[in-house]
Image (cartoon, rainbow, N blue to C red; front, side):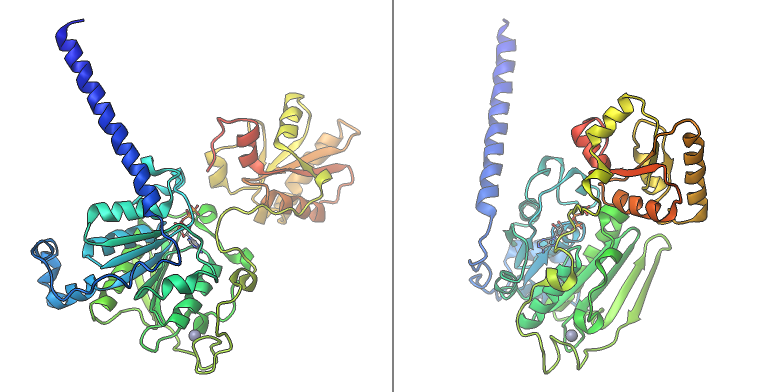
Length: 450
Ligand SMILES: Nc1ncnc2c1ncn2[C@@H]1O[C@H](COP(=O)(O)OP(=O)(O)OP(=O)(O)O)[C@@H](O)[C@H]1O
Ligand SMILES: [Zn+2]
């Protein structure tokens, strides 16, 4: 081997060694980074009275704004902000707050990064898939601005830990995605006396408001009762364009900065509604603090945190939950369905997802697409009936009608609906347990999941 070649190989080995060391470092960061609830990481931070020269240079472009100035920047660097949720809203909010120079940024999230997060949860990158979101976000913020103390909490905020954490911070951002956590955060912020900057985003729309600030209303003043769980849509089912939480999360950061620097907050008792498709921002005035509010009125009936999952009848996470509505004999496993296909067994497959989902992927056989909410329509009933009629002419056996959906929840409701609306005796209506997700897991690993 020529000497040159040996030198080249040595270089390559040295580079790889460096990479290995870097990766080892990253794993250490992850371990060191995680925080225990009982530890107070915020109140022991020394308060600043002036800025260092590097801070003056770094923040110069916002320092020269008269609304900020040295005074505002010092205030900001003495402010601690807790962001609950390091997802679509939490990522842009966190990075702008870190860039702007808040003193301490707490980041709460129990979840790990998934590939389907990357289109909008912009602090996480491909190398962070499966890494804890709070750690990934804290690393990104620290990398951008090492003046900011980032405190990641890998936990689900709940009634037993919320007050301990929230009471350490000055301002709280709700960047979560479920109703139970919204009520929890509201109540905890009232009890701890903290302003709550709340955001939400779905599809092409976003909303923003600030609760519990300077005598303004709280979430319960406006929504005393939680919505029925079945009316709540999450990003996973409804979809969301990444820019929308990008915009709303950035506005959450802006409102927090205004509060921290002593500027007027724009969304106290006001709701911003952004329609990204129309390109419109609308602000509506909300009703004020309610004298009957169970938590923020002068005579509250709620004086400590309650069980919010029970109160809302829904879990404090939007993770897919599977429900079992049908008896086992009314259901087929994905593997059972595969063997039915292999045997060319005549049947009718009804895909009850939305057409846009059918475009993403569908089972490798003929199917008809009738979305769950259209099953009751007479056109759907007629279509299904005539298919069953023509199949029953060729057999004396029951005609199998098999419903499928993404995860095996809607397909069970579809079976129930079809049973109610169809007037046939000679049909056997079933669904596929776990839907296409189970098909991908147990039958065809090449099948796309979304
Ligand atoms: N009670 C809670 N405690 C801690 N983190 C929470 C809580 N409730 C929600 N979250 C976090 O808030 C974030 C909300 O962000 P977002 O909806 O963009 O993410 P997601 O749940 O990963 O989205 P998808 O629905 O696409 O899976 C999530 O990362 C979720 O883990
Ligand atoms: Zn209230």
